[in-house]
Length: 202
Image (cartoon, rainbow, N blue to C red; front, side, top):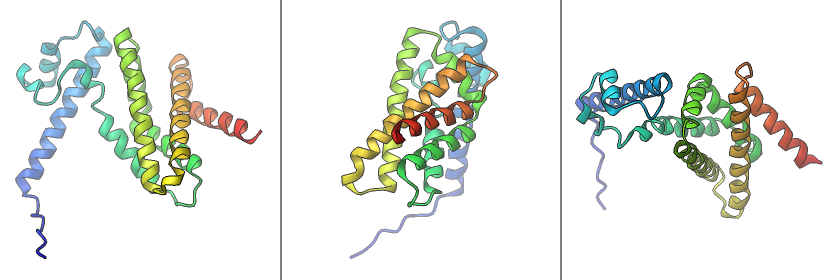
């Protein structure tokens, strides 16, 4: 049986991929900055394109809408969570592994950037609804990563519940942190998990 070998990536292809990612990141950063300065509704696509140094029509080569800019970091979030989970020993209890990976995710993603995105997402009712959907996507991501580390199907119900509880703890921590600018998101997350552990052990 013949096995088709994957061809090595051409240097130009790698460069183009990096260039595209850099442009995508520049557009997302420009949009987030303008949302914070002028408000989401008042920020136009023309303004975002000008701030990112691209033509307006080029915007749609990277994003479908203004709202899509707020999800530009999802790939980074997924990669960071999976990497943090992969670094943990398989003997680590699933709940503790999830808690440690979410804590590392916060550290890698950046608290200030998370605060900015959270502020924009609370600007309108429509964006708040989008944020709810975002948490649901994060639950699926966490469950998928946990199931990949512990693939035994009999344990998947427990892993799904752990994912739901973990993301709920993160959501509570983010809301508390958003109201208290002097607090630390990591500290609030640790408090959420400590409260869960206390309830589970009583």
